[in-house]
Length: 121
Image (cartoon, rainbow, N blue to C red; front, side, top):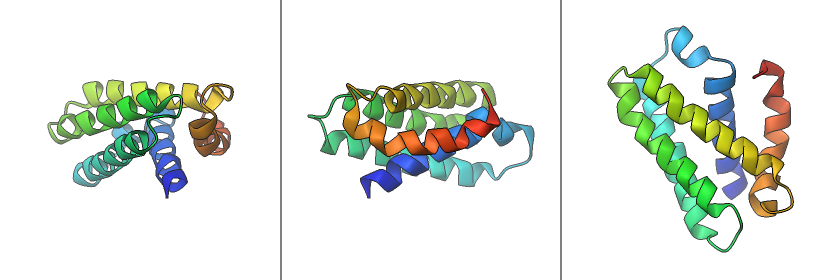
């Protein structure tokens, strides 16, 4: 389950941030807000359950930032929400590429990051 949560979080972040689709075309903001809340909570729980693993603070903080994006999305404050989600994306990208220190979490997100790099940065 932990791998699925991390994969969903990376998929959401890469889809929203890298492709830029989230705010350039009409989306269901309520659905997007719910997904951010769910994934943010899931990331926070994942980090809390694995506090002894390196990078758990980064993963937990990413979860908090996703949760903080929810009211911004609902209030149509897209630039602030985009900034938060971009921060989450960069943090999870760093966790993904830091194999030596973040072995537990990087193994969860690395494959998906490679798959979604086709969008460019």
